[in-house]
Image (cartoon, rainbow, N blue to C red):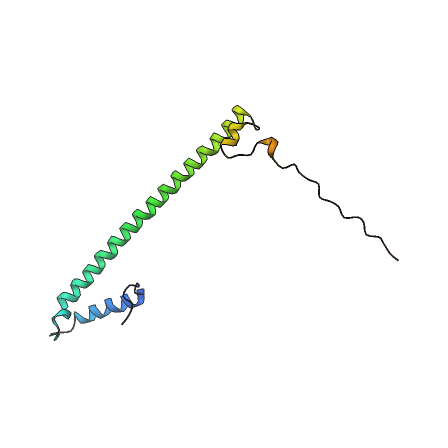
Length: 125
């Protein structure tokens, strides 16, 4: 049996929709199994269309909510960056207050080191 938890491809769904359209043109269709009457198949198609529309609307709402959350995250991040600059301006680059915000004091930064230059290689002739 097929894995009925995965989505069907658009080509399969289009083929099914085409088959339903063809079924509507078959006169005297009387299936032995009442589960497959034209009315029940049409109801299944209508239900699928409604669920697809609902999914599309909910996906759009999710996308909008994600955009709103991203905007809020950036607003908060930019506010904290501004706070850090204000603390640096008010208390100085070597203050404990700056360190409390997670920044490194100026006096505790690693001093730049000059790269060791290798000795010149002797030229041999």
